[in-house]
Length: 323
Image 1 (tube, rainbow, N blue to C red):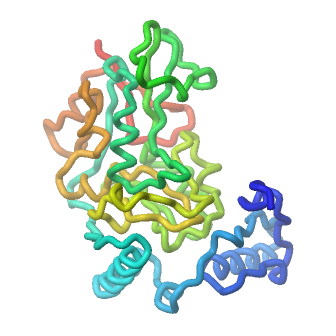
Image 2 (cartoon, rainbow, N blue to C red):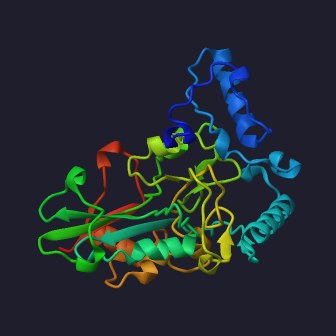
């Protein structure tokens, strides 16, 4: 079977319920069947491609799991225990998995000093190490664009440059990751509400609900979503055991994932891994509701640039220049 057939690109779109032939039944197949039924009933077009190879059998408890926002603490505790057992079985580690809630009075934002960034890509690898991203195939949440000074042309930017030779004369560097948009296209595109924005501004994904339709990937104007076409592989020695349910827990095959501002760190008073590792202090992270926070000084006193501002996504990720 070709790679295109495996990822669903050349598969025939379902026209009826009989066209969906998942076996065994999973939440993903069940929800897709429901979406097809709705489309057929209302006369709408069916555009979801079934990804048969990506579905895994679920236990009854997992199949019947309620949406995250409906879960009681007791039900979440049971889910956490189940996932920890799965991680132990699959990866032979004891995960410290928690569901950390938003902090009242906190709304996170990020600012990046383009003039200081040297394109070293340490943020890219710190993010991978913290967030348990697959190493084979390799998944990275942060892209660092190398561009000509005096230009802002994303089409001609290069993110395959050699990090051993930076900073190059006449170049500047612009890291791009999830912008945690207040008007997030990915949230609007998700047909089953598997992704949403939390009160602290972080756009999250419940990997137990994601059906792998990839609508969010198509909707994101920043190319910030990633999809596991293959089963993620992480060497045991590289697994970060401190995990968050909506953050860096090891993802299954066939779900969309993204940067969450290291939710498992930032909701516990720490900086995102990318900000902590930056050698030039280019990255400023903080609470915009806190008077005197460095992020507010940046927004009030620097020349701030919003990527693709014309789309009105209202991101919480800003770029700034020194005056």
